[in-house]
Length: 486
Image (cartoon, rainbow, N blue to C red):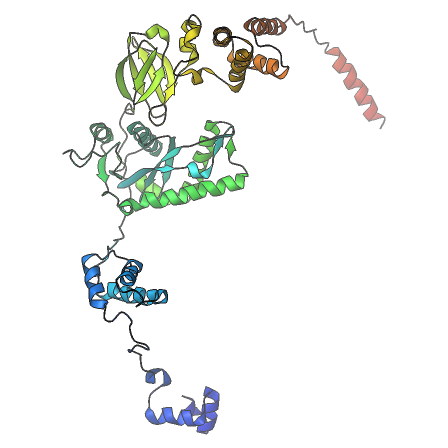
């Protein structure tokens, strides 16, 4: 203390930054300044809600979720003119104190200890808000996201719905990329994996078969309790943030093809996993071995092709070749495509539609018969799908402008048949040229121009003269003489 080291109390007080009389007062009392300050435990003004507090407290006890603003507005309605809007904050503070001292206990989150090779978690995450485009077209998609909870090693697969096929493909892709199988797999309440509450079985039959194939123990979280799958939820946020930042660095969000976008994502996963190698090596030692083969991740359905040359599959309509009308075909449904099998042979592959009540009609399947029935074209239910490009649509409109409906339909369908038999790309280019030159659109003109292009592109016989190697020797000798003479 300065009072013990300095010659006088006045010098000690000056060095402590206080008046001499104040210093003598503290020395006499033996209490330091910080110890002499009393805590205030009284209100500076009267509580405006003192009379109403018992009723407010009773309401909060019955319904702890009530907000202070709701109660305040109710008091204003019940007792008009008693409370002003500026007193809301006072009630909010009082209710906050009540909740912290007398209210119901809050949910406690318990941090978990993770062990290597034991638990993996997965879920679907929507990537649409990142505004990725493929060849200029918006690419709405999901990513099946897989994470090891101990090392945070992660990977993912692009998909378009939270279907079982997407879950199976994504999970198997992840396991085969790992080269082993963890002991447990956790998901949220995915309808593709978890049965509803009225079903005695926890998991769906197909998902349980998938787990059994890899000797995985399935786990699910409770309904609306996303924090129970917090590892994957947190990785969703960090992964999408990393994708967003990588796209910023790239300078643009358009990719020429979907394959290039997939390559971009896989490179990003490799970068993210590069700092997790040591913990990942610990997990590799614990993994169980993979089975001999992947499990088939498609669903098979047997369907009869209707008289309109279409099948109805998962609430969507698809066309197949008219040769199959009346026959039973097998549809093998994958996450992104549908294979059409007949007589143990794969005869077609169709893109799988997203959503319900949609249609995919391929004009090549039906054009041969539609040409014979041109009158059916104008009011055909799926007519809008028989325009492969804008040029085809504009050509049809141009035909209708100068011909009757019957003639316009007949001419257009012949042009469409020509595209099916020869080349859709070349017919499209011819239509574009005719429209740009404002020339009449006629089947004969398109066919004639297509034939003339074929003649023009015939490869002629080309003779390549034999190379005289002695010319190179002469050139080399001349160059050597020039160098020698400097």
